[in-house]
Image 1 (cartoon, rainbow over the protein chains, first blue to last red):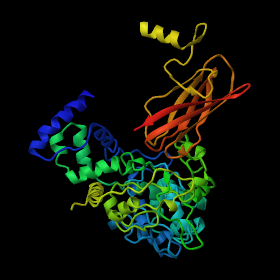
Image 2: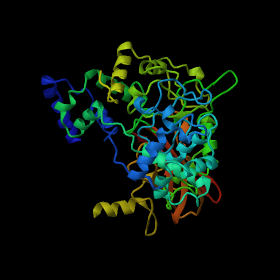
Image 3: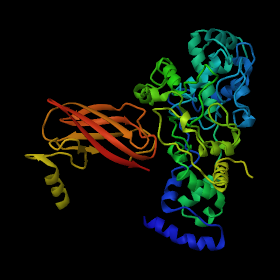
Image 4: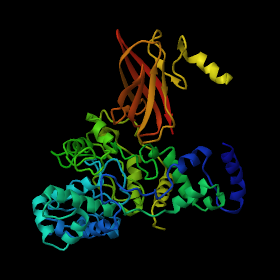
Length: 376
Length: 126
C-alpha cells in the first residue's frame, strides 16, 4: 500500500516533464496482472518431444509441407500463414469447401487449458490432429500417413525421436506427428510490445518510463478495465481466460445450420482418446487431466466460443469465431451496439451495449494496437 | 500467544476441540444450522484452486457438495469440483475455478442425517 502511495505521489512530478500516468492505484494493480510477458516456457509433460530442438525443426518442416494432406493439397501453413501471424486475412479458410470458422492464430498456444474455438482438445498435439483427419481439410488417415512417412524425407528424423516406424501402429505414428507439430507451435510466441514496456515500468516503479506510453492508449486501457467490461473475459498475461462465452455473434451458418460452438466441442472432447486423461498422453501423472475429468456440460454452452487471446491482435484481422468483423474498430462497435436479442436465453447477463463515444472507441482501439508489435 | 488462545476459545465447538480454526464462517440458510467454515488462500483468476470446508458441532456429515455462481452474470463455474473427506467433518474441495473477476457466491450443501443445510459465502475476485 505504501509503495503505491509513493507511486501516486510521483505522478505529479512525472507529468511535469513527460506525459502522465493516468491510471488509478486499482487500475495499476489490474494492469500488472497482464504480465510479465513472455511467460517462462515449460515443456509439455504430455508430449515427450516438447522442447526438443530436433522435434521443433521436424515439426516446423511438416507444418509447411503439404505432404500431411492426403493429396498434397494443403499444409498447415495454408490456413495459418507464418507471414500473417499464423492466420489468414480472409474471414474463413477455404479447405475442400468453405470452413465454418475463422482460422485462429497459432501464436502463444503453449500451456492452454483448451484449444480451438469450441475447445474440442485439451492439449496442443491433439488439436494438431483434427485438421489432418478432417474431411474438409487434409482428409488424411493414420494408415495413409504412415505409408507416406515411411518411405519419405522425414522418416529418419521421425525414427531418431520415436524409434522404428515399421513397428508402430498407424495411430501411434499419427499421434507422434501431432506431437512434432505441437513442439514447433509451442515456439510461436509474440514478442513484448509497447504495452509490456508500460506494464513493466509500472511494476518497477519507473513512472518516467511508464509515462511515455501514449495517453490515448492509457485511456483505452482504462475503458478496457472499466466501462468496456473487456477484462471480464480478456484477463491474465494472454488477455484471455481461455473459457467460453456468447459474444453476441450470430451462430447461424445458413438458414438451416448452426455452429454449436462449445456444445459440440465438448461432445468431441469427451469422446476423444487423445486427451490428457487418455492413453496417448506421455505424462504418467496425468497433469492437467482434471479439466476434462470435471468439465461441466450445459445447454448454455450452445453457441459459445473460446475467448481469443489479444496478444498480437492487431495482426490477426478479421475477428470473431466466424471472421465476420473486419477490423478492431468493427469489434468495438459490435460491443457498443450489441443486439441482446441475439444472446443466448440462458447465457451470461454480462453484456449490454457499451454506448461509447467515438473518442472512446478510438482510445480502445489505440490500446489494443499496443498489444502488437505494429507501430503506427 | 494470547491471540492464539483467544482464537481457540472463539472457534471451540466442544470440550477441547477447536473447529473452524483459521476459517471464514459460512452463512447458513437456517438459524439452527451447525457452524461451518471455509479455508482458502489467495484465489487465482481463471486458474484452478482448492479450498477446505469444516462443519462443526460433532454431527456426522453424510455428504457435502460445493459449487459457486456469479449472481450478476447468471452463471456458475464451468467445472464440477471434487470433494474428498480428509478428517472428521473436514473436506478438501479441488478443481474450483473462477473464470471471471467479480462477485462469486460459494454454495455449500451439507447433508446431515435428517436434512440438507445450505450455506453461502461471498468471494470478490479482482
